[in-house]
Image (tube, rainbow, N blue to C red; front, top):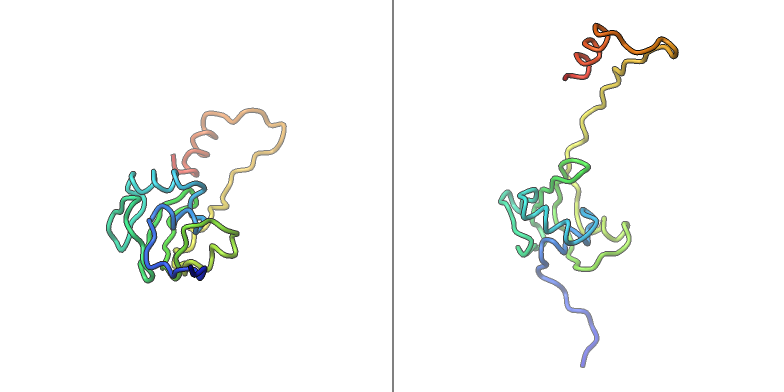
Length: 125
């Protein structure tokens, strides 16, 4: 009996997302797939869909949209360094933060009705 590892040709989508540290648990990855937050090659994918090298995965996570090109396959979760070797990240940069925060002087009390409207207008409410 040989003990050499067999090269994987395909892995379940939920296992790969979990191994690539895109989602914290495999069940959360499966729920995201079921909810339609994950696309495999521009098509909505179920958790049991098989991933191959060269596939493109788009996942909407808490951190925003992430776009991956699969370079390697794994069904085991390892350290973050190892997870980064599974994909090439094509994610768009996060939108710039709006630094126009309204700062009021301390001790001036609650904002007036007019000031509240101005604050809401700045925040886009």
